[in-house]
Image 1 (cartoon, one colour):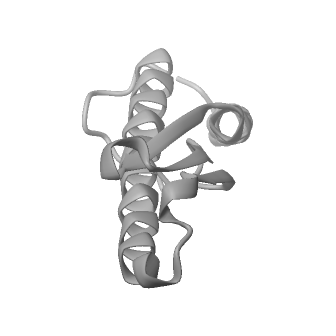
Image 2 (cartoon, rainbow, N blue to C red):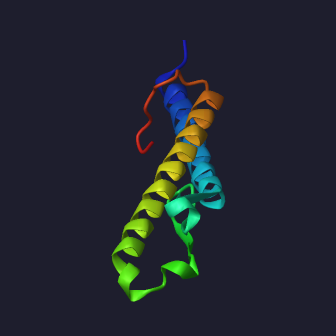
Image 3 (cartoon, helix red, strand yellow):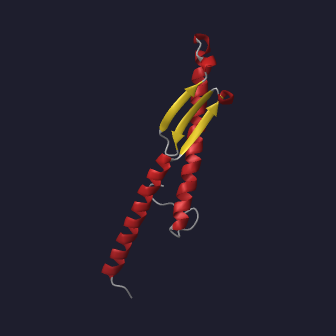
Length: 112
């Protein structure tokens, strides 16, 4: 039987490994791009899988004062589309990381 000190050391090493993998996953997520689209592609928003907005593209046809309300709605829709895609990619990456650690499906680690 392992001593308490050995068990604590093993637990600490496991926690450090998990923390390192979490940091690596967050860095990886920030490098993955998704694109949200609205209005049939008239408005697109590029975001990282971590949710950082990288760029916005607005079709010239929407740059009219009378189209302001439509443009605002399309920007919000494109952002929400990008955010949903980012969340999906992040969830897949976290699930892959968890399975690599041998954790059962659905197991929730703090901060995930």
